[in-house]
Length: 317
Image (cartoon, rainbow, N blue to C red; front, side, top):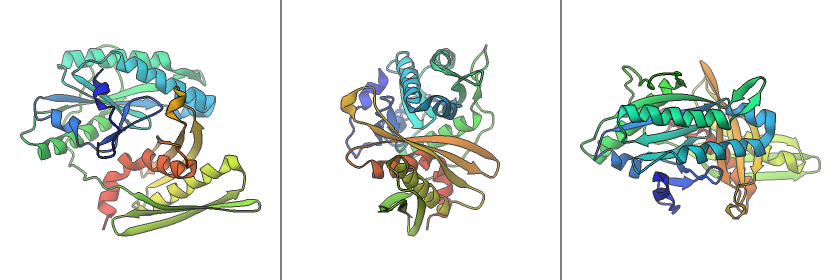
């Protein structure tokens, strides 16, 4: 499959492999994806797994992970060398394809059918539901322009995402024109977890350019609660960087066991991203490695980094 070419996980590459789904998790839009736009026109498809948080709430982390793996397995089985599928944010997949429009529509319909089949019942409905947005990426004259056009196309597809019609093609956005946000991300610089009797205190420090945010979260000193406190402190620190009216609220932090044991466990963080006119659940995953506490903070950052980059760009000094 197309994503098999992207299995190198060396740190200089703009992706890492998500140990939950096996898909590349893009950490930047640079690299092979943008380079493809130098040779051909492309279509960018944003696939939002709407209601994924309900799976976690109703069925727990094990079912949540199983549903995501099955969705990824089915989707990658439909791809060929023209396609690149990645995990874009916690509840979004990103498909970049060189297929003509008619074939893009058929492919998306097949992926959506697989998402529906992989879902689980929650309160009388089957979730997650696929919301899809499409944008076109015209061939770029140089690499810098390819990066600009790709980022604009991704954001246009996200804005256009909605339920897929039962018949007919996926419709691209009309008149969507977005400026390219440069990548500005909050970075984790320190983490401390103080344990004293019945009280646990997590203290997280983030940096953004020259700005520093330090936040803490205090709760019961029980092992099952400590990762949540770290995620909560991370979310509060992120919020300190955001403009008025925006915020990040931790929802849950859990340990995930992968489908293949040798991959090692991961940490799943789910957050509620608040803006002046909407609320959205986002998910982030980080390998647990030898320090699940650091992983809890990184997973919380991974959940929101893509969504808040344009906001952080304006806030950076």
